[in-house]
Length: 302
Image (tube, rainbow, N blue to C red; front, side):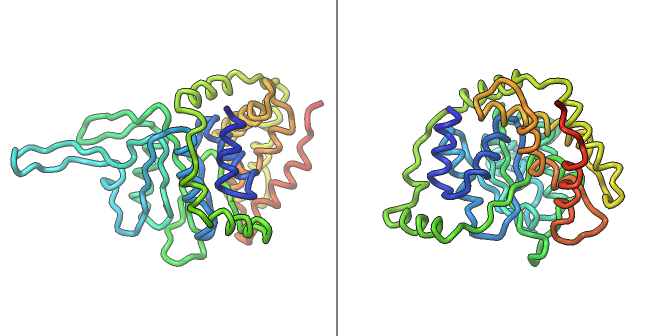
């Protein structure tokens, strides 16, 4: 199932296998994904392709400065013909949700979505409504230097299991993209290759993947090292360690193993950690440099 899903997504987002693989790992680890990139690099296409490939319900919210929390979660709507209020659920009640340009909305609207992600439920007019069992948010944001953006607060960034950056395609890949669009789009030709029940079953299997206590300690040491680094303004929380282990399990599962090895932890380390560590030096790549030093310093268990 995993191989079919990877192949299906690779056929739509050409030349970006690493990003596709991380996205599938996050889905299997029951996390949410934040993609930070410039417009036009395939973020929206990837989200739509994922929903089609797993046969899931899909909704898209285009975040704008005037978007209200009720536009995300829903609320009570007055019916003039009956004189009653009716609960209308918002677009958040779906299985795969694309939160497009999340950092263009106000912090209040951002938090409405992020609370739903955390709680897996929404309160409307005093009633609690559960979200679907498979609820996966793929949020996109423009880099902070773009005009009209509200940077996600540090605490909100922590809700995303991984942050990815797709980047521009190479010359050869861009030529393939041009050829692929001669007769329609790759997305229009995509068919479901699995279903929601298979994904939920795969999640159960990911949770059963064995991780040795020495590797758990290694993951915790990597997280703790961010708290003792003099160049860090805000270090990784305990949630970072939990997500690091979950993603390492998913990495092993995607590779066809039932046990985690050190390579799994190192493979997912940067996507899990980079958006959780805030350096005192705000220069480009500062978080990455700190994390690279930590990986070199913390000993890999034998």
